[in-house]
Image: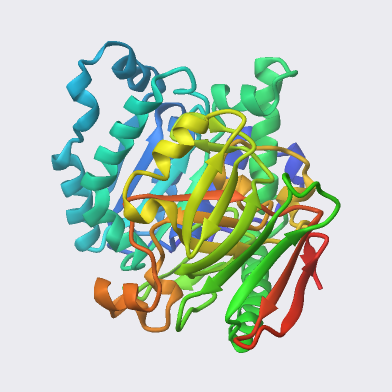
Length: 428
């Protein structure tokens, strides 16, 4: 793999933009996906991310990639479907495409997703059509997604700033300034601004690993999230039971193919698998959720015995309720994650309208599919055994943020004894 030194006599802010892109690309290849010589790389990206994709492709070939293949998506053509396609279109997904992705992953191709599409692209479209199209895609993608959730291959997600996304994040700025500001935020939170980003990522992963090891040593039965200083109808008091044989994960990890990677660039979370039947109480989102082009604000849900029994939102409520009715597992949790409020992303004060970033600014939960890697020995377990331990099964996996400066978290033992883990959003 390439051993390019990141040391520069000039501060990061003085580097040419192309050099900054190249630095992000090298981190994506070396730290993110951990690409190995003679391994294929499959990239999915918005078409506006082409400059970053070209740098990533160069870095991948320098690392010895056998072949790099990119599939581009275009917001304008996506929107055209909702405006002009026949109704039957929204129950269809191109199985041939998703089958090809699954075949690539089964042949040990690495996966890199580049996020950056317009978060509000489908905000004005029929929520029923959006829900149907998402469900069709999820069904078709499931064989490939199973390889991701079982961590069978090395994979990562990184970000590229795009004009539509930037204008949503910085609505008061000119388009040019908004795009520049979003790139600056991506570079900073992706930890590429130091003299040696590779070493910086090693240290960051080591810090997360120490926290993960501590959480695993506790063997908590459940977590209690509760806020202070909020009216009862806007706060949170939620007890999340943890799956039997749950395993905390975070930062970089080794996939089943033996390759070490960082699935998310950036990342700040320690996460594990909840028990699908042991979640009770009420929870209020601390940030809006951008899901598949739809914005959902002020989510509030009530759980009983693992299931959502009531769900409201001040914007996008119809889309939220269609999301949680995707299948039986869509109204249950597949992930719970702890993120301190002092994380760089939270401290930036930026609402990114993008889950890759916003989930690393706050503790969060995810509706839907659980990660089998968050169970001891889960990668090799059949679905029935995973379910028996409490791991949820679903076509979806959607994270939304519940943490912040007023959030407290206790770890609970089986007898109900509580140990403080977080107070006012940060680790005790």
